[in-house]
Image (cartoon, rainbow, N blue to C red; front, side, top):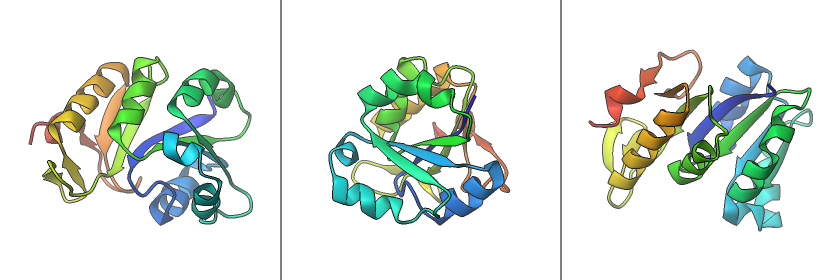
Length: 160
């Protein structure tokens, strides 16, 4: 299995992901699952500029990610799936892509209708429901910003 990291983080490709997680897990490629970014070449170029030369990024729609999941997971290098929100990760879960996988929540920030559950995670009722569904499919759902931090299981923060 090439895909080692499944992460929900509104910031997508940034220092914590590239240096903190990428270096630790030996990530070679990132797949950003986001319908809007999949259609915007200039935004893709901007996001990908945060990567070193040895790493690559693909920007795909939710539909394409589900369709190509087996292909991506059979690569010989190591990859990460990144989503900006819970909706996209839920779609992957419901398509069977997260069976036996762990999902990491790295950052969902304050916004309309969201309540603080951790310093770096704010959830709306719909996002709480998405995480519940993701948790039914994934081996685990945990929050942590970096791999060196303790894992906070979904049950400890979803209902906060």
